[in-house]
Length: 178
Image 1 (cartoon, helix red, strand yellow):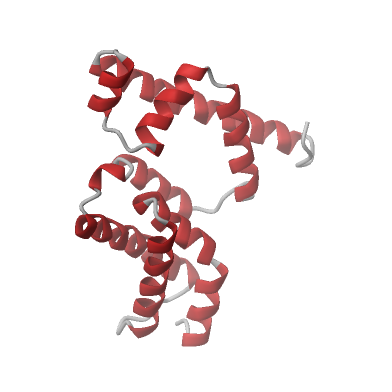
Image 2: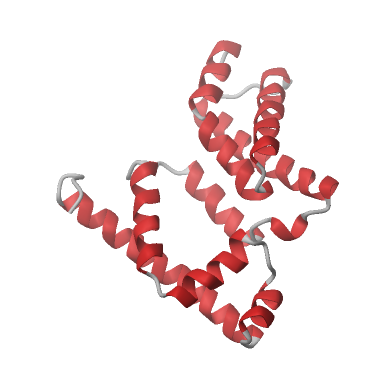
């Protein structure tokens, strides 16, 4: 069982990732910080105890996500959140042990996005950063809805392959950049 000091220490160690999880839902830095504080308070005052740090972190990420969704509902900004499927994938990723440091993944993503065609970057910006629905993106780009769904799916897959390729290449170089 984790003691209160252990819970607090783990929360502070994971603060950036927990806040990032909240930010991915709400897209508001101040709200994400408030959500982190609410989650920390709940973790410290819960009647249920945590067996280990992994159990605490699993509960924390799920709670941060739910708090973020509740915040969106209260602020009626649900269109700005990521699809539930993407949130589930992110949640799963955060709960698993990462083979590479988070910084390496972010750097690989940035490189892959920079190498993507302008039209792909525009589609991703409209969908995930500007918060447009797929229907609105289709309208903005003058493309059919089914085509948008297919493009988003292909983009997810190509970005995944690109990131994995860059990470495996970096691992082959002993973690050094090419």
